Every structure is written in C-alpha cells, then in structure tokens.
Image (cartoon, rainbow, N blue to C red; front, side, top):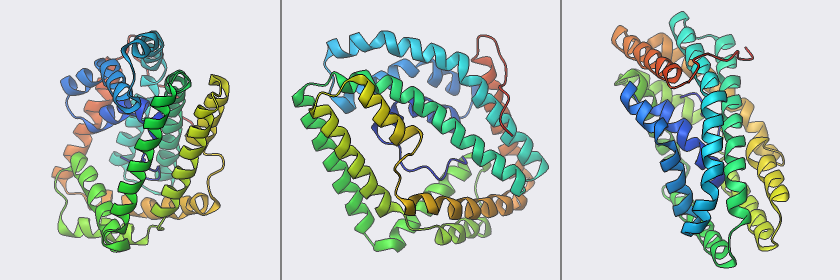
Length: 298
C-alpha cells in the first residue's frame, strides 16, 4: 500500500514480488494462504512464460525455487507480519510525519529483501538461456518499451497523471472501501504535485535492459549477472540523479497525502482498514511454521 516510490518491477523483481503482491493485495485468510502456498506454481509459471523456458531448464531450477521459498517462509514472513502490524498500529494512532517516515523506510527495506530473493532465483535462469532465448527476451523488452512509450504519449502528461491517480485510488479503496469525492480529490492533488519521472525511468530501464542483454550474449557467468542485477534492482546503484532526487519530493508528497487521507476516513472506512490489516497480519503469522514478528528498524 505504501510502496509508491518504486517503479514497475522489471523481470527479476517480478518473480519474487509475485509472492509479496499476492500477500499484500488479497484479502481473506483462505485467499492469502492459498496464494502463498501456491507461490511455487505462480513463480514457476511466470518465469517459464517470460523467459520461454524449456521443460529441462525448469526442472533443473525447481530445487533452487523450493529452497528459496522455504527460506522465504522462515525469514521473510516475520518481516512482512511485523510491517503490517506496524501499519495497523500507525493507522489506529493516526499518521504523522514520524510514523510515515518509518513506514516508508520499512516498505523500501521489504522491497529490497524480496528483490534479493528475485536475483537469486533469476540469475541461473538467465545464465542458462540459449542464444535464441536471449534474442526472444530482447524482442520482448523492445515490445514492452514500445507499448510503455505509446501509453505515455497517449494524451500527454495529463493522461499519465490521471492513470496514476486512478491506480492509486483503486489501491486505497481496496483497503478502505469507497472513497468520497473529497478524498479522491486529495489523491488527485497529490498526484498532480508528483515529479514527472516516467520517461526518465523508461529510458533508464531500457539502458539497463540493454546492458543485461549484452551480458547474456557475452555468456557472462552467474557471478557477473548476479552483481549486475543486485546493483540495478536491489541497491539502485547508477540510478540517474534526476530519479534519485525525485524520491525526496515523492516522499514529502505522499507523506502529506496519507496523513490527510487517514485523518479523513469515516468510521466504516476505518473499520474496514483495521480489519484488512488485522486479518493480513494474522494470516502471515499462521503461515509460519514457528510464528513470530521480526524487529523492524523503527
């Protein structure tokens, strides 16, 4: 819900974020439990489709996937449960700058933790791609870039802001129920103040994807591929200065938005948000073999 600053996840992070997104967007114990317990199927199906893998490549990768998902259950569910509990306590007390700063820092830490799993999972798959598979991956990257640029050009910056606003409203309403017109206006005002970084991000992503294809064509080993992906997707090294600088403005804007928005919730919205967070926290605890919540940095 609060991981607003991150760009749409590239190939590697999508693999592990399949798990995170399922947990943080689906409601109801049975749904969350089912999604997590089927994570091996979801991640495997996504990787197979995106990379056009052969059955033998998938079979050789399955032991690593099983190992990493078991490690994720043991090591990451306590962090996810603690984050949701942190959000629950903050929403009950009322958000302020201090609690929002803590939630944003925790959400970035969660992202980076999931991204490290993604790099571990995707590296051997990328290193084992055939020349034909690398060519198809490059074509897929180019097709996605063309689609994204066409969407960005459609209607100009105004249309992009409207799409961004609609996506955020839909996300918030999943947690709170229907927003009143005044609450939607708060979201629209905040999105209008957000820095325009979409084109910068698409250019940066295109450059990094090109660098990845070059590595794969050169038959770089797993160590080089892993280091490249970690710098790019986990630690965000080499990000253009304009994108890096925009993060501060985004933080300030979204902090002000959520403080005002949570303060504006009526009792029905508060009850829904409270129940969604409580249920999700409890589900994340029940999914653990030895239930616990990690200690967060703040």
